[in-house]
Image (cartoon, rainbow, N blue to C red):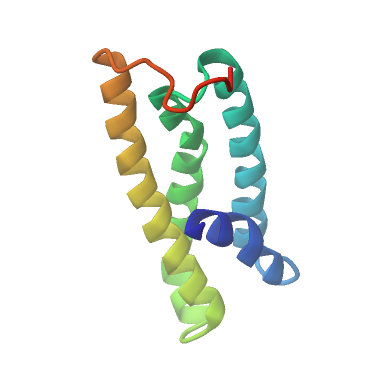
Length: 116
């Protein structure tokens, strides 16, 4: 739920004044499409960890933008959200990487049946 909030809902509040919000929201839409394709291919398996792969370039961009954002918008909700989305998404990528490794080590069964 926190990933949904930080990547798809909160950016809506910052679209009018922050390009970072557009980048996060656009990446969330690409990620959603990626999950649809992966689910069609392998069902609800650990391979879905690849679904967040579009976050990698987004996170690089956000991290590079962070110093400027801290100068321009100190102590604002925007800066709080920017930190939160970076931390939450990195944490999710770590879990995703572990799931993909487990998939390629043989844990290829669907975690929820009937989605493929």
